[in-house]
Every structure is written in structure tokens, then in C-alpha cells.
Image (tube, rainbow, N blue to C red; front, side, top):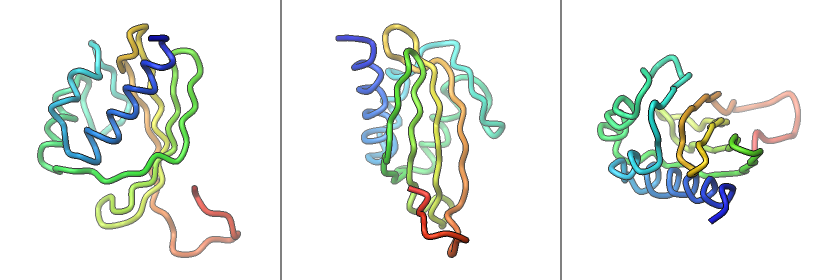
Length: 122
């Protein structure tokens, strides 16, 4: 399987199975170490994220777009109820040649009730 296909498979498994279906036990199969986390709320390594997923259970989300550029992927995501409010997110991942996640950045913001334009965040 080409690296690009492996990356897309990893992303689909992460969002469909780990987040939407609550299968946090699959996370170690998607990550390679050392896993570098740029979200300031989580330390490096998979264990903090696994702990969060265990306490949260499912994390319903909807992938809107995926862009893959070599070993980087950008995922535009809708979270219908993150902390009780709809959120828009962009996750950025760096992968190894086997298609496993080695680094993660994210940007997350609430979807406002009204906007200065008629465009949606998705």
C-alpha cells in the first residue's frame, strides 16, 4: 500500500473508529513514537490522549476535508458538541513512512451563532 493510502487509512480509522465509535484502544496502532504533541493541553506521547478518550468515551465528529502533502495531512473537522458547543477544527499531522502519526498540531474554535458573512465554517 502506498504511503498516501496508509495515511488516509490511519486518518479514517482515527476519526471513524477512535473518535466516533469510542475505540481508544486502537490509538496505539495509529501512532509511532516518540509521538510529539503541540496541543498545550496534552503532554507528548499517546497515553494522555488515550486517558482523555477513555474518560470522554465517544467524541462525535465529521470529517469535512482531508489534504495530504507528502508526510503531512490536514483535516478539517466538525465537532457537533465539543464541551456542549459546535466547534470547527483543523488537525495537522506528520506521519512516518509506514503511515503512522508521529506529530500533531491543532486549531479549534467554537462555531458562532451569527457571522458577519453568509459563509459557513465548513
